[in-house]
Image 1 (cartoon, rainbow, N blue to C red):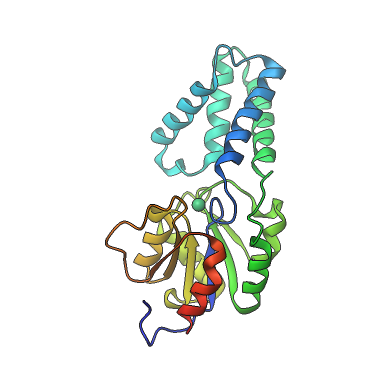
Image 2: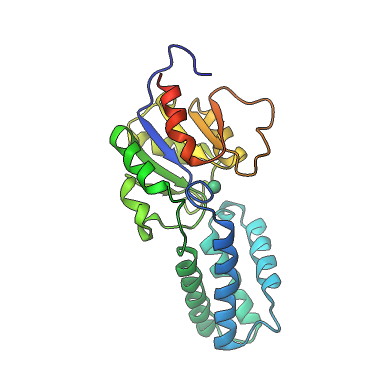
Amino acid sequence: MTPANAPRLTALTFDLDDTLWANRAVMERAEAEHYAWLDGEIGHANDFPLEEYTRRRMALGLEHPLRRGDFTWLRREAMHAMLRDAGHDDEQAGHWSRAAIERFLALRHELTPFPEASELLDSLARDYRLGAITNGNVDLARLALDHHFEFSIAAGEWLAPKPDARPFLAAMARLGSRPSTTLHIGDSWKEDALPAARLGMQAAWIDVKGQGAPAPVPAGVHVISHVRELPALIARLND
Ligand SMILES: [Mg+2]
C-alpha cells in the first residue's frame, strides 16, 4: 500500500532482460551458436568445449571483482586467453575472440519483446519520463524499443552493477526525479526490487516464476507477474 500522502510518480526506470522480453532462450541460442560458428572457422571446440569457456569466464569474474558485471569484457578476455592456450598467437587470438564476441552480440540482440511492450511503453512515455538500467550487455540502441527511453545505463559496464545504488541515483538525476516519485520495474528481487526500495523508490517486482515475494516485503515493493500489469499498478499508486 502507498501512504495516502505519497507524491505522484513522475519517472519510471526499467530493467530490460526478462522484464521486457524473455531472455533465457535468447542467451542459450547466442551462446551455442557463436561458439559453433567459431568452431566452424578454427576447430577449437574439441580441445576447449563450451563448458571450459564458461568456467574461464566465471574464474575471471572472481579474479576481477570490479569487472564481474562487465560480461562483454569477461567474454572477450576469457576467449582470448583460451585461444592462446589453443595455440594461436596473440594477434590471431585477438582477431578470433573479437569476431566471436561480435557474433555473440549480434545473436544476443535477436530477441522478441513481449507483444504488449511497445504499446505499453508508448503510452507510459506520454505521462512519465522513462530510463533503462540493465546489468546485461544488451545495447538498447540496437533494438526497436530504444526510442521509448531517454537513456539506458549499462550498469555492469559502469563497473557498478545493480544492486549498487549508483546506477539508480544516476538514472534519477537524469530523469529529474526523486526516489519517492520514481518507480523501478524489474524481475530480480536482489538486483531490482531490494535496491530500489532501499533508496526509497517505489518498485514493481515482476515475479516471473510465480514464487511469491520473499518475506518481509519492504515498503514500496509491489508484486506483479508480468509487465502488462504495470498500467493498473501505476493507476493504483497514483490514485
Ligand atoms: Mg532482468
